[in-house]
Image 1: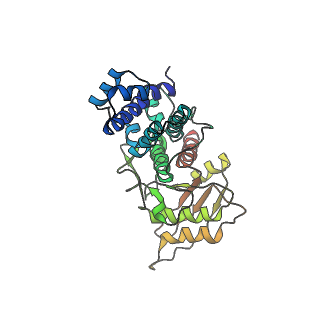
Image 2 (image 1 turned 120 degrees about the horizontal axis):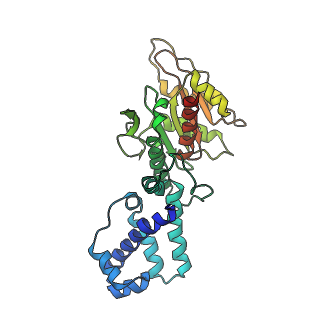
Image 3 (image 1 turned 90 degrees about the vertical axis):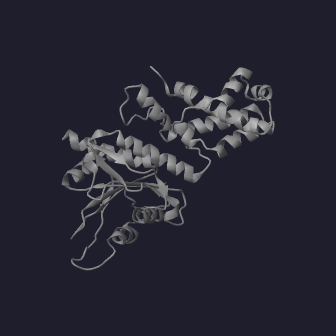
Length: 312
């Protein structure tokens, strides 16, 4: 059995050491000096400087800015405890948003929705937008690894959005270009998440965020809606609200704004639901919107619904 901490030791820490060694070397430090600063052997530093590390999700998410923060701690002669705290902070963030889970699933026979090492881990990131993107990427991966999630796909496909804590516009909300679509009985994304590419879902999320002063809502997902989904919602006891929306026939109107405006006008600040239902209408399919603190949270709720569908 391999624990997540072993993956961090084997995959993340060597990447951190190599990246810091590269930065220190670029500043003119010798291999011997770097070895003393990193508390490793000189041959290890030589290996780090001469060889490229294999690319993985850690190398994608651990950008130069974060490495510079750790390197600056070393150069400033700060206490070792501060460096340890910085490294542990990175480790916690990768665990919190499921990056470590990607490696763990490949090495262990884990259920898709496993959160064993994530529960009660504090969320600590250096950039609100990096936090949102990591959260969204991990949510996408989780949903793509859930085979029966295809039952959730509406005709317009699945979209997941993740906002920073205080968005001023849709540019502060990340989403999936092209949405999640069905490919050979599985959900797949065709492009990596970006900010500012989903004005419709962003407006829906931001309107609910503006309503809530007590709930920390930052994410939403849209899934199909019908009577079977309603039965699952009822069985799971998810607090929900049906919006009252009229879609006129043969008239030009902005259907997308209808949902956002209905949330603004019909949702009570004293009773914020975790799920909102657009009933649909002429040329408009019904859609369920799930809201939560993180993209991971709303995906887990969506998976709970699809599990309930397939158990009955």
